[in-house]
Image (cartoon, rainbow, N blue to C red; front, side, top):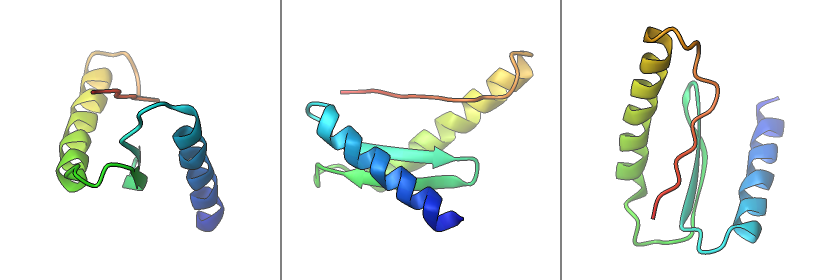
Length: 80
């Protein structure tokens, strides 16, 4: 089952690369951490970006639950 999920994520990443102009990286994060990543710009420090994003994701999850808004379902970050 894990391989089929990885295949689906890889297809999503490939499609994003084709459909989004000027893409530098895509990072898919699930409840257990990073699921997959695609880096187009080798100058990016992807490990630092991933670490910082995971911290932000934990804050967003806690904020959503603590405020009574419910469980975090999706969080999308687009930056320059």
